[in-house]
Image 1 (cartoon, rainbow, N blue to C red):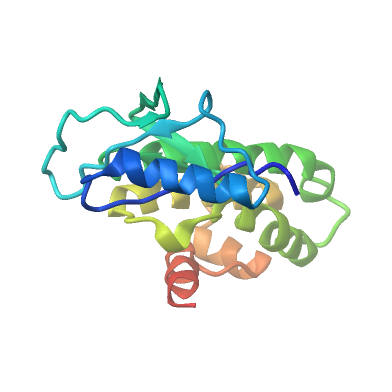
Image 2: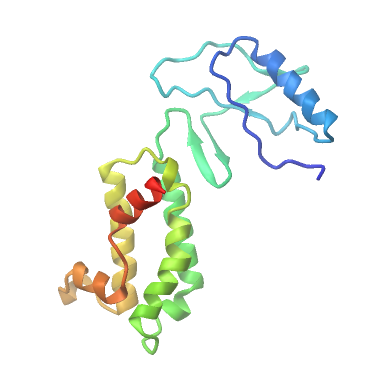
Length: 188
């Protein structure tokens, strides 16, 4: 393998960061990998509320550009640690998977339990990718619950006007509550 697509270097101290980065670059080069100077990005996290210094990060003579967010292994990491854009991205990807599987999920001839299993095996893992690491809030859980409720109603062929409780539909499809699944995934 001669190419690494994603690598993250994390440093708490910020002391001698440029020297550490050069050591990493040389260590990777020694093993046959090349760390791209043009694609490298610098994200200074402010999770504790304390802003970092203004020290530039360089690789050789090239200054590494500072960004507010970046994508790493399918997740969006932001400067302040909020996950709203990551959740929005996961929802868009979930709907994309839904469209790909809509022939099965919207077919009235297919049993609802089978649709629930397809949903459980295709859509949910796509939406929940990275949930173990999310510092999630109640409002964000609510957004994900609305997504799931819309999908379940659509699978069953009902709308809100039919006034069928989601608990009944959830039981019919065989899908557990999204909060329970999230806590189970985090505990695993």
